[in-house]
Image (cartoon, rainbow, N blue to C red; front, side, top):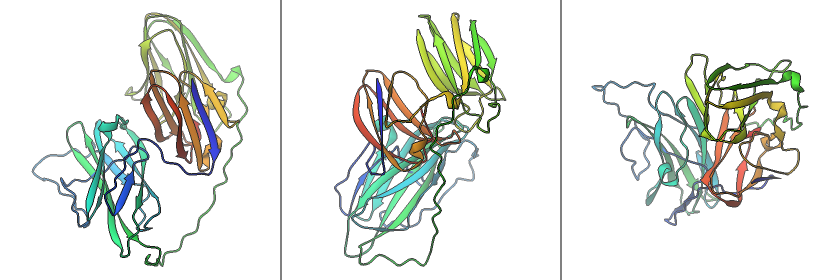
Length: 365
């Protein structure tokens, strides 16, 4: 059983977390976080990093991971928690490691994703991660840096570094930059469910390649859900493919019986073909996203794979997640466009009341 509880506008720290008591900073990792640099070391003087490339070696830049900071504050106040977010993109190769390195003059704190069994983006996918830190409040300003390193299957690396100036409340540098914040007009109303004339139902036996609908009629949103109903004890494998017949996403590969609901046309790329591989009878129902269960109340429960409309979570919110069971438990959050926001949970077994801070979320899977 899965239990998700939504509550508004408070702060919390997400899992997994690491802490450091080394002064002058303590750190905690909130979402999978990494650091990437094309250098083999990070200096304690926090000088700007440089990128070195051996021109005698042929490098296919389409294989290199991409690392980019989404937020990188330049001046921060000691004693106050800050959050830094960054994206890691796998291009034409698999990412096998992401490292996050917090570095200051007196010490270093390093976290490897592989030590926590955290998910990496697959080929042609981008994941956004966040990390929090509470730097100590010193009398004089000091430098703090976060480096993210991503390594692919060919042992090629790419990296990015964000450097902060940490000051006390009395000594914080005065910035001459002004900014204007424009609040978004967020629609948290749930659309009406579509009747069966909008559905596509296919019931067959054996291996089939099924051409998927690419647009919902009378709608600007092409996001859909895929319901799989399989009563046999034999194995069934379901994957999606792109318009160029490139394998995109493995939805299901397990022994039955099985029922579950999965997202279609998510992750920023259209699904073109549904590849169903089994010798037994199966049924799939394709529906508009408006037919997904929704977060109209503050609590929602269920079991198995489910896609949930969660438009109230576009505002910064806390959610509390619980799970009872011994198997794999994953919760992904998505933007309104269907692109992945963050991988919120990836664990095994029972968890109880694990709190996360989320924002810009329209869908949960």
